[in-house]
Image 1 (cartoon, rainbow over the protein chains, first blue to last red):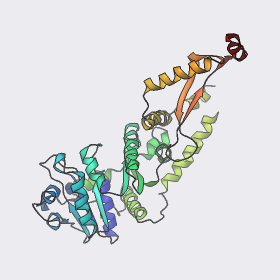
Image 2 (image 1 turned 90 degrees about the horizontal axis):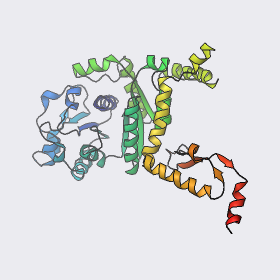
Image 3 (image 1 turned 90 degrees about the vertical axis):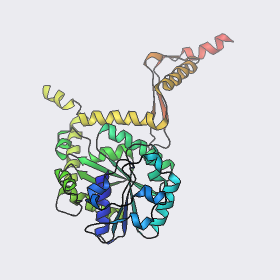
Image 4 (image 1 turned 180 degrees about the vertical axis):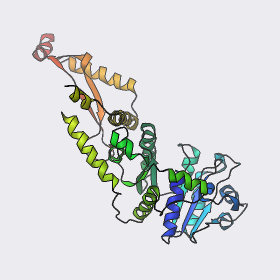
Length: 248
Length: 96
């Protein structure tokens, strides 16, 4: 999920948008590491909320993109350090200066999640094509719908096309069918994601499968109609073939 | 024949999909299995007043309606095998 935030944020900034990424996972900071900015942190989100610094002081400028900033989370505090109300206040300040405020949301549906969604109006729900992850995603979507989010889109992460072909993994359309929310991207399981995290450089926009997938997600976030990458065709063809067999 | 059985075998993908569909319906309606069992017993009781049914093999299920609206309007489906329909008209009159 952090990888998704980092890549979507970086991709949008690369397309000229003013973007700020906020790591809302208090106590388990990691967006800074994925972005390769861990050595530049002075102040963090909790410092801003407690009035120890101004919003601008806690913003770290990205290494590569002029219009991209990161607000890191606090590593040594716990999630009770922030309330939803305080979060809304920080976000509304950032909205004045940025076109996209991306909140990297912690796992779970507790305080951290409540804080993260308090000031948001749009969500990208990330799931893998596994039973447990999809069940959790469905619960998240239910909570977001109850909050009347304007838009909730689905990202299917770590899809393995080899397993899909063997009938050992749900297809993207299976997942969409079950969750019934619009699909905004499919990210294949790609070892390059690990490599990019090792290096602290998001791979959006490069030639790798995941890099292309994230690029397409960014385009779709901006409202552009981008067809899903070729291997999706192979999948739907295969679904049809197996479908014939099972009718007998 | 063997070949046919081979193709009939459910893939883990299908098992996952089937399990999720059922799981998410009960997650979404927030209805416990105990409550489903109580609904089932009550339905059986009511229907039994009018006709002889096979309460053992009846099934009830909450499913999504045809609309793709994230199941905002789930419906309750009951599959109740009727053993004897003729008895239905007799019992209320006989009690009169």
